[in-house]
Image (cartoon, rainbow, N blue to C red; front, side, top):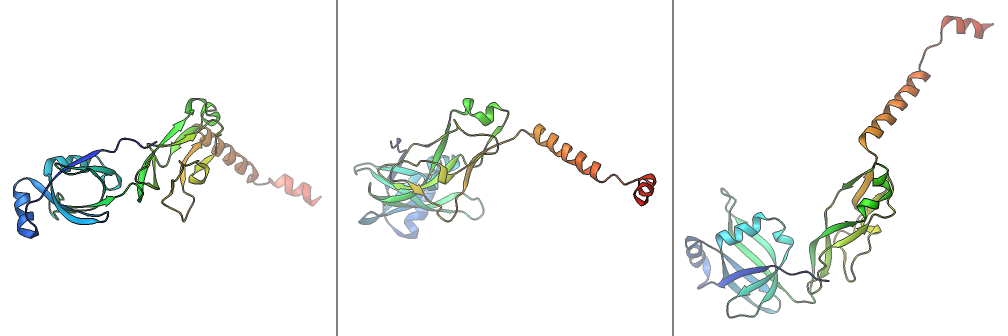
Length: 221
C-alpha cells in the first residue's frame, strides 16, 4: 500500500560548529543535522540548488524521505525545521529526524475521487467542489498509503463529504481530531441557485404588494 518514498541525497559534514557551517554555505551547500531514532546526531550537508528545488515543489515538511548518505545504510527521515535567511528567504540550515518503520508520523496524503462521471449529483448538473485535495493523517512510517479514496457513486446535490464519511487505510487516523472537517461537496449549479433566488424574491414582492383603497373600503363594509 505504501508508495515509493523519495530519496534525499546528503553527505557527512566535515567538522561541526558555526565555522564549519559557514564554510559549507560558501561551498554551495546547506548544513544540517540528523537526529533521533536511537542514534547519535549527525552533521550533514545537502547541495543548495538540489534542496531548493525540493523545497519549491511544496510539501517538503510533511513528506517522508529516504536519506541516502554514501557508505551508510539508508534511513527514513522527516524534516522538522528549515532555517532561512531573513532577507533572501533562502535555506541556511535543515533539521531532519530519523524514523523507524514502526514510528508514527503526521503526513499529508492525496485524495482520489472515484466514479465522478457516474455521480448522481454531478449527472444532474451539480458541481463537485473539492475543499481538500489532501488530508493530514497519522500513519506508520513503514506503511504510508499512496492516497485515500472517496467513492462518489451515491453522492447527490447538496451532499457533503466529511472525514468521518471516509474509510481510511488500516492503521491510519486523522491528524485533526477536534472536528469533523469537510473534504468535498456537490453543490447546485450557479444558474439554478440564481433562479431559486429570483423566485424567492418574486414571492416576497407579491406578499408585499400594498392593498388598494377599494380593498380597504370592502373590508370596512
